[in-house]
Length: 524
Image 1 (cartoon, helix red, strand yellow):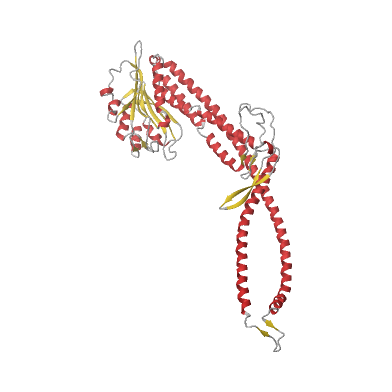
Image 2 (image 1 turned 90 degrees about the vertical axis):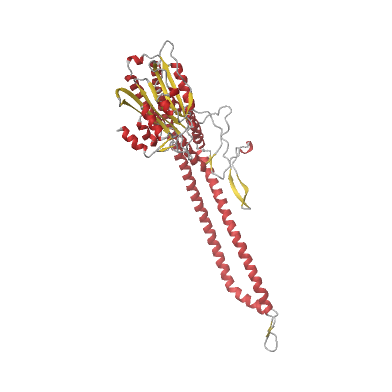
């Protein structure tokens, strides 16, 4: 059944060959066991079949005296951009089929190309040609599928023969996976312990995945979280700063949400519970391996100590992951609290801003009402007196002569009046209309920016005074000079906007507050 599914699964695979290497470590019995070879060497595609079937230069003098060993095909610098995508294999199809069949590797490895996160599986099987020959098969894989257009990760498929006492398989990964360093550690461990344990390589890969950088990153994230909590008015860290610690700075309110989102993404990176499952299954595989060994095989020099070391390391990793998970959970809860605090600040700012805008709109409406009443009065007076003034001014000009004995006369040059007045009136009205439109357009933009900045600054100043938070809006700036630490003031900064000058309100710092010594964080 497994072979049928294996062949069916390979039909949809894309095969992208990569450069290969090999590692072979064989320990022989005797008074002083020695390693046959413990270095990684290049392996051409033409020599792969000889290595798998131990032919040619790879033929061993004899396997009768081998106590244990490991034989690996390695791809430690996979270059393909899609190497760890679904249904992609970095071996040619016939070579991969030969690799799986000759080393009795788990055929389920091809089905793990779509798994996410750390994946570890193990199982026991029998050799179809020899039912008494049992194998412990392992698949260990971690791939991020695609990151900025490039896949990355690592994968291994191993098989341990209880009869031959040799671990066989392949390991492949990108350069960032550190396969080269892991192979060096494996060679050094095998040379020191003499014995070769089938779970030793998976343990080394696990240790590389659980490097101390994860805990260090979580501590750095917690430091940034404390700064946010202190800036938003928390009194928990009301203590004297250590020597060399820089001055506390205010944080832009508009940037806090982005900071919280960035911290939450980093906190959730490499979540411990996904690795905890792999550690648990590694423990089960280690126990199964030891139970299946015969009493004679358990007497191999160094194997029992290596078994105990692997179990201790797995227990230690499990405890580390438990502590890290608790630490991350506390960080996530505190991030949620700070997000609620930030939302409350924003709500207060928005509500106060809306109230201030409404109050100003009411004052503007009252002012507009008074101006409208005045204009109505002026319009009424103009409607009453302007007609008579126009008639008297026209007939008072020298173009008309009402004293004439013939009943009055009109000069033939009266057209001069209209030729001058009409264009002059048009020029004056057009100039006024253009200047007024430009002034209103500029004033509307300037008043909007200035008023919003001024209102926002006043609101944030009130919130800072009431809550003690070191949070300010985008238009606010903190003054750190000794002369201005005890006063609050607002100033204007001239900035160029599309060639023109605009005034932007700058909200200044709260009075300098001396912080006393408070309780520590109690180790959280």
